[in-house]
Length: 114
Length: 118
Image 1 (cartoon, rainbow over the protein chains, first blue to last red):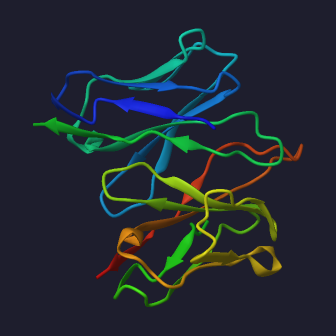
Image 2: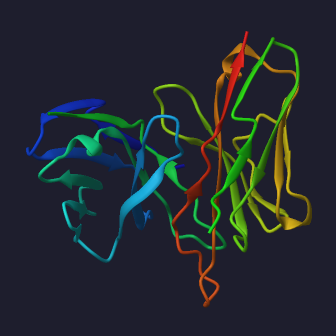
């Protein structure tokens, strides 16, 4: 099955700086790569996703890049703000068939220092 | 639109006792998932339903865990008997299919049920 590795496990940045989180996956058939943000006491929430036919996707201060050859993808957050502090999870999914099945990374605790 | 509802939010039991968690997905969402999230780890899929049928339960410890989704709406996850290593947050998620009957990919998670086994 799919295996997703994520690093770093913790990341502290100054407000206004950029943050980068990286993930690698093992199953070359995976074609969908979402990123979820989990705030304390809440369930994960999708913030951005990318499909394998695209190399990069941006949404305001958040961007994701995908390198299918190397089987890795990254989350980039620019101009970080204190409200960006949370745990971020990457995930990978093979072609869905009847329904998507996500394998999650182990998470990155991002702390944005004021 | 109401989100995914889960209850109870917190449960403390002793090992070998039983516990049940309930999930009500977003209205109209055909796919329902139960994930286990151990402290400091990412969510791990336990079971996936499409309507009221099981799509994948390969990672569900069937000797102690069971789940059902009667009538293709609400779902219940049961643990009996509980072990210390079952201490975790149990997350329910749902997703919908678009008008071409394709799964869109986005999972909508509830806030989870935190289980502590003493």
